[in-house]
Image (cartoon, rainbow, N blue to C red):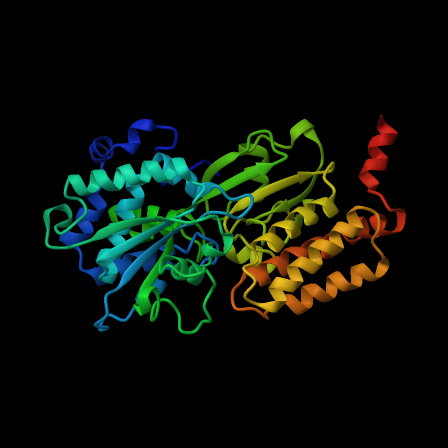
Length: 429
């Protein structure tokens, strides 16, 4: 499938950051159409038709999510934009923030009009210094030109947008941890239910959407939900930004229709494997997604197809590994990340991620035992479904992928006290 540039059409164009250039190229016409030509309910219905799903990781239908917000609630409603992109292998939202900030702002306006929101918060990863500066300048431009504020685009609709910088905690990318952080509290996730659509920010109804999700709204409103749905496949409308990294010749962000096979992304767009080595494994959706083997490379990249094989599309951060990569080392890296980023609120996550990291460290340095494999499998089972948020489940899924797909590498490390790949490299040398 060819690259389809819906949200990536201005990537690499520094002029697109300016409001003047964005408006000259049709910017804010979708927001104008929504506010002055469509009722809020019509906007939501168009998004439902589009089959746009949440592109931060969960994949929940966007229009349906909006519809959960009670229209008759007397409390104020809020939109929080999740720009706290911090999962290893994921960097797609950064491109939107850096190259096309006004597209995000336009999406915020459209969503806010549809749901009846008058205050939006963008929660951006603290380490994203340059994206924050660019986004801040864009928001200030929008206020100056009357696109935001008391009279959005010169009408009677009011909308204020605030940017809040995170402080480096991965857990604040979890939607309720994000809300806690915005409220000035420790970013510990909340029990659900109640869900944010009912009791969210400041105990008020709240929509939480990802950057890429909102960036798609401009085209959906201008060209129609059915047009957008037809670009993708059943229940997975439109395109997706895939963040491709690892052992590929051309790493980067590629926008392709939903349903594109991984093989096409890796070999046609990514240029194939570095050194033309053999493909060994793929992480298809960020660190939480269970690893896939080379014989699964033809799976279509959709939420549903990857779920059928026990993995997930998640954040679409695709990490490619070739035959030179040790799976024990790969799992060790991921286990280190989850152990470090666990917020510590839930015992299975706090203790489990630490145990797994220490056990894999032993196996890696040659002091592991056969019992360690059984302990890892037990930890994976006992961590699943036992904590407040999905971090613990995501970690357990990642562990299960490595242990289930590459058990022989762990067994070799335990038996021989070294890596099979190191022995092979020494033989070649």
